[in-house]
Amino acid sequence: MGKVIILDFGHFIHNAAYSKSDMYPPYSAMVSMISCLKRVKINKDDLIIIAVDGRKSWRKDFETAYKANRKALRDKSGKDWTKIFSDFDKFLHKLDVSTKWNIIKIDRLEADDIMAVACRYYKNNEVILITTDSDLHQMWIYPNVKIYSPHPKVKNFKFPPKNFNVYKFIRQKIKKEATDNLISPVVTEEDYTNRNICVNLLQLPEWVEEIIIKSFENIKEKEENLFLFPFPKLVERFTTMCIKNKQIGEETVGNVRKKIIQQTLY
Image (tube, helix red, strand yellow):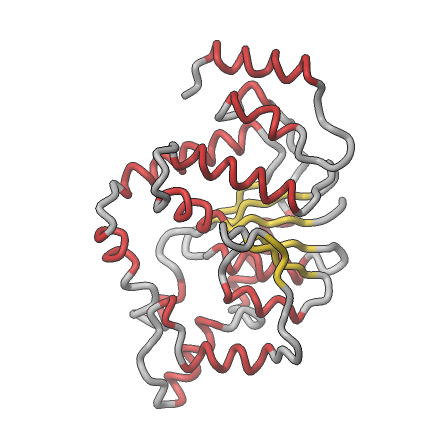
């Protein structure tokens, strides 16, 4: 196995859904994911994981305010989020059955958790996190980890600032983490403990770590079935992402596209 590359699916959902483009959001997300993977220079032996937020984060057990404002922000956008999430669920299923990518989604766990544990579990591999979430900057403490930002204005690797102190970084997030709606003052020892549990990705609860490790242990080699690929027009881009060993030739790409169209999968 080569590199371990993990895509933060939440970024691609929201970036596509909030876009002013008329492009179908899952299609837009697929274009963006392919672009990111090409930029980090993947090889065919790399392990690609899509980390997906589960329902009802365990962090709400410790901080009821945790991301409590997210639904209101979505409602304010005026978009049909029920349809958006439904479309992305179908999209994920098609990716799962058509590619060798591994989809990891666990109830009550977040993509952050999956990415953090991966940095430790795959400590002997280069791990690339594709995310805009600053919480994952904590992973800079691990020498095997790189962070690639898919933000439209960045689209490049990010590196820690000079003299970066991860523990100071965590303390700042304990004091206030507006992105996650953790803005109430930390007054008591219990406040501090609960906030630390929520923001510290270096010390996740043992049960969280164990569930995710088990999901990694259960990863098996998958067969690629591009006849089920969700978007025929993107087959060629998908199959030529690798910097070496392009997976299939021009003629095969055309045949795959024709069969997908014939099957009218979407």
